[in-house]
Image (cartoon, rainbow, N blue to C red; front, side, top):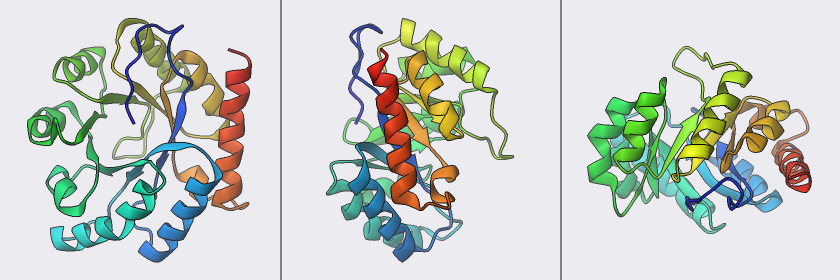
Length: 219
C-alpha cells in the first residue's frame, strides 16, 4: 500500500485511498465497499469507526476486513491502534503527531502506521523520522475544517520534492483530485462526497478514477 518513491520523476502514478463514513450500517457499507473496490484500483480503505466499545469495534472490523483485503487493498483504521491486530486490520491512521508517536512502536513493523493531523511541516518531519508509512495532508479536523486547496497543494509539493515516505492528499471534492495528484501525491483520499453522490458509489468511484487517469495522461 505504501511504496516509497525516490524523486518526483520516478514516482509511481497515484492511487486511490477511500475514506468511509463513520457510523455507516455494516451491511450497507460492505455493499458499498464491494462496489467501490470492483469499479476502480483502490490501494487502501480508511475505516472511520463510530463511538462504540472495543468489542463492538473489533466485530465491525472483522466483518469488513475480508471484503477489503480480498481486493488487495489495505484496511486502515481511523485511530484505535489497539483494535488493529485484534480485528484483523492492516494498520491505523493516527490523527495527530502525539497519537502517532504513542502508537507507532506498537504497530510497526507488522502493521501500517499512517500519520495525519499534521498541522505544521515540523510535525510532518517528525512523523517521517519516526518511521511513518505515509503522511496525510488536507483531511478535516474534529470541527470538519480543512486547509485551503492551495495550502494542501503547497504542502504536498514540498513533501514530494524532499521526502521518500509516501504522501496521501485528501481531496474534498472531485475537482480537487487532479490538483493534488499533480502536486505529487502518491495516494488521493476520497471522503464523504463519494458515499453521498446521488449517482451511487460505483459511479462516483469510477468518476474519481477517470479524473486520476486524466491526470496521468498529461504527466
